[in-house]
Length: 424
Image 1 (cartoon, rainbow, N blue to C red):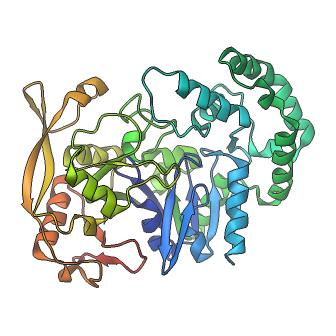
Image 2 (image 1 turned 45 degrees about the vertical axis):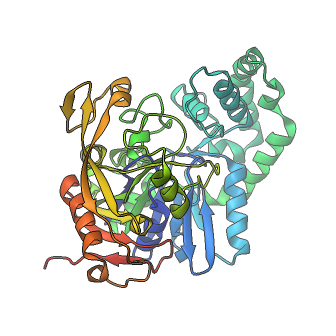
Image 3 (image 1 turned 90 degrees about the vertical axis):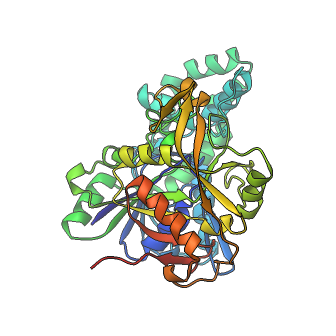
């Protein structure tokens, strides 16, 4: 079975926890896009693990893969591997040799460009966008290059002068392009990971031929997709489910299931339009109760009511077969809960988001109001134990997105998840 899992909103939906829940039943967990700008938090009993590149299935000792659609900072990857091994975890990882490497000059260019922008995007300044630029320009350093000093040096001699000029023109440190200490460290990591290199496409296809279970894990969320997101306030890769096939080299006919992860409200980190954003006490309540601070950057997330208009588009973009609803417990204590069911755009009613980001920024939410609940739901053990108002809220989201919710998270712990009744 081949399952793809993606975030259905602006990221930070709780994908790490859901992957961790699913991973026990899978043989392979593979990351298919993004870089260490992603942050997946998994909490098991009293331990919290914050992962940026390692797939969340590591806690079950599964075979882990990083596909060639990922951009990888080898320092971050190696630090994660070493940290997890010190925790006593078995890190059985395979990395595609075509995986693009984030070089120090990518990070410098990213920081310089964001600093110079009159309108900030909200980049994490980790070099993600510039690494993807080099991939598309066919001037990338790949993971395989880090295993061969002569090969890496030839690459840097070829592409280095243009990068040095670009950094110098922006007032940055051009010596970072061919910095000997950084290159030496990258080569050391390359040698350490040499035996972990694998053809990810071949490994996944062979696994599926043997009826093994493969879970493809996405980073960020649907509306940060470089094509379908809220341009220009997006990430630099393709975050929707279809990109898993292209990035991993697996034909779409092999996909069996597409899981969408949605938060019971909506959050966004960084810049960009968000029609249901709450700049009031309710938004602050969600932020503090939900711990809405970025795993990667620590930045406060903007919070708002659930946006079913975006939710419907996300269902179309990804073709979800099921949904996992997270952080329902955060809404406990609110007397009235709202769901955005339409937009008002300059006096025109819309039930689907406009393509133009400027028009999207002018959209005003039209709300459906629902009754809240006060009961503590963090300890419930079954869906039926949820308060009637909480179940009604989940079922309204299910109805509006026209996709079945199969799991509901009521707290950060692995055990704080209930599953909805399934029809025979």
